[in-house]
Image (tube, rainbow, N blue to C red; front, top):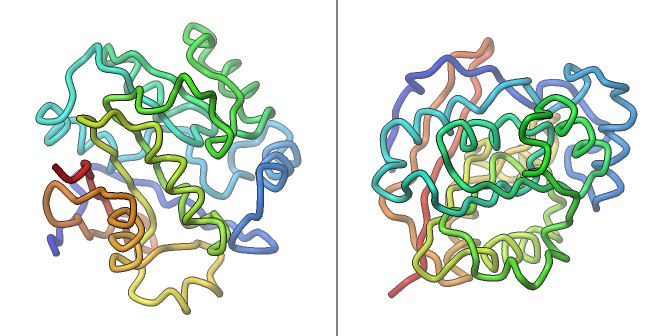
Length: 230
């Protein structure tokens, strides 16, 4: 497994506790955004900027997988910062989240790109999105999904992907799912992530990146790009 120190300056996410580390359904996420009352610092997974591991991937490996103009789906886009990174680089972006308050907030923050944001649950995504996207991006959503729902969630994400497309997943990393279960900053182990995506016929383009960021304390991350087996 590849190990590196993130070259970009990253800000840790998920450092603020919720009552439960994993959320059950869309209404749980909506409550978090609504209760934040416009304060980004009260959203455990939000930083107000694009994820550094995403930016680093776009600057290095991204051009090997996608080009500007390609169709990109940003799943669970939250406040929209990762989607804006793609939009600013010329991609055709659909960014969506199941929480209406998150989408309203994203449209307000990024008003010039408001038409790219929409409210939708990936598990009930419009049929026209099936196998449509050249790149499907999931940034740290999986660890926040209750473990019993992760397979259904990941299957729905994979359904968006064009047969020749790529899926980029970035999430908090851990060696022990048991330890992660008691954490206020949820994470997923590399073996579990790989088993999950492989069950849908996806395979990593290379070894997962396993690295720590520059936060205090440092946060561990996993990053992988996956394609369908051929």
